[in-house]
Every structure is written in C-alpha cells, then in structure tokens.
Image 1 (cartoon, rainbow, N blue to C red):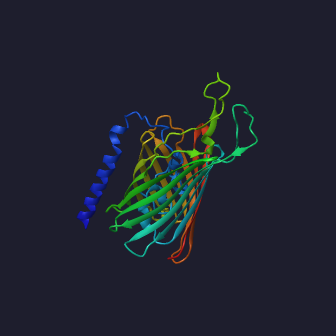
Image 2: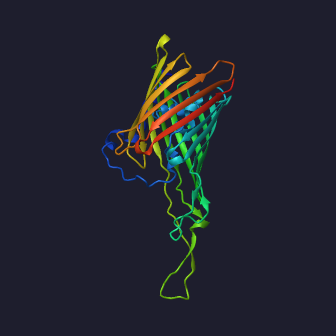
Length: 347
C-alpha cells in the first residue's frame, strides 16, 4: 500500500508540473487577458478560504471545496451546507451556496452548488438620450454545479463537477457547460496534503437576445429605404479555464492551538501565473485568525492582502456551525468583505 501511495503521489506531481508548466511560464508574456467569457467564475468563494488568500486546493474540507477542488468533499463525514455573501466591487453582490452529502457506498460524496453575481438595476441610456430613457435594465451571472467525489484509498481521492453557466444582461443571455476535475492526496507525512484542480473546461459562450435586433439605413443617399431590419451577432468566447495546484501543512501546537499554512499555484488561460499564500492560527479548536496574499508575481495586480477570522463550533453527535469573515484589499477599487455561515448536521 505504501508503494501504491508513493506511485500515486509521483503521478500527481507529474500531472501538476506538466499541466501548469510551472517554471517557464513565469517569464512568458500573457496574451489572453480579457478574452474569456464569464469572468465571475474566477471570483473566490468562502470567507475562510479567502481570508487565507484563496489557498484552498489542498485544504478543501468544507462545502467550498465544490469550487476549489471537488475531490476534497470526501473528507466531509456528515451533511454540511455553507452560504456566503460577498459585497463585491462597484456595488455588485456575489453569493455562493453549497451542500455536501456523504454517500454510504464507495467512500464517496455528492455535492451541489450555486454561484451568482448580481449587478443591480441600471438606467438604460442611448446616444440620443444619454440621460436615460426612463427604463432600467439588470444583469445576472449564474453557475449551477453538481459534483461527485470518490476516495480510492484512505489518502487519495478524485472529484468531478458538471456545471451549467448562464450570463444575462437585460434581454440578452448566453449559456455554457463546463467540467471541473480535481484530485486530493494526503501524504504519509502527517499534516501534509496536496491538491490539484482543473476548473471551467467547457464550451464557448455567446450572448443572444432581442436587444440585438435593430434597424439600419443602408444608404443615406436614398430616402425610400431607411429602416432595414438587422440582427447583430456577438462573438463567442471561451470560459476562463484555470489549473490550480496546492499544498498545505497543518501542525498542532499543543496547548497553544494549531497552525495551518498553504500555497496555491494558479495557471489561468486569461492571465499570468500567480501564487496565493495563506496562514491560519486556531485556538481551542474553535477560534481562528487568518491572513494571506493573492496573486503574487502577477504584473499590475490590484488585489493582494487578505485577512479573516472565524468561529467553528462542533460537538460529536450534535449540530455544528461555522461563522467566518474575510477582508480583501483591492487598492483603488476599494475593499471587499465576505461573510460565510456553515452548518454541519449530526451523522
């Protein structure tokens, strides 16, 4: 079994290095910025994870694993749910809901999650009426995912998520389908874990709708033809696929509590590679302080420092709950505040 575990670990490391091209990519100029659809898929979820700078691929032991690494949900041993609200940039609202149900067969678990980004109501403006037409429009992005994970050994698990993605602005909308694939490995060294996830591998997205219907004057020289019906067509764009490789190490400090450190390497298709760093100090198994840094080595990055705290109350045989808060510094774009509430039901 030890030999099998070492072989699995070696294969995982090969996959991570091969797919992320870690070392050379740090010196290659990125040409894909701003060329993908549904960028809301890259906004991190969960106040605990974001308090640690988004370093969660190798932690992933609560329902937010459905976003960071679905393979991690096999570590959840009772029904759990988590709800997050994020006061996102420029008065938008970013929300997450996730639920995980352990299954009584194959050491597996089933998960369900919803992510939404709501932009609010905005006045409709035109060239001829820049002050507004009296109408309002809104916009909403949604991703719904169904996940399944299985533990092949007591140390190694894999997970798969199937996602439906929709973007809507007024009367235009577009859909896409995507997959997330994750692996999770708990090494023989106590407290050391590895994780890898490929997110948003899917179809292109194109907006369609009646707001693209209009009329044009094909030739202003002729007055007998001035209102020809046309339908504008938008281009289709790929989803922001991301490869995420993580490592975490947790150490008990006896009466002083516990310490968890983690790092994630991100390789997105629409931006530069970057590294997230995070740390969590726990006291009495209930009170937690967190800090982290996002997007290290990313040129012209706006965000960076993250801070957080939380309370996790759990007693075997009874219902438990978690409450977490995270702060993110976005420089000239102001700050971001996330709040999460989690519930774990008795076995």
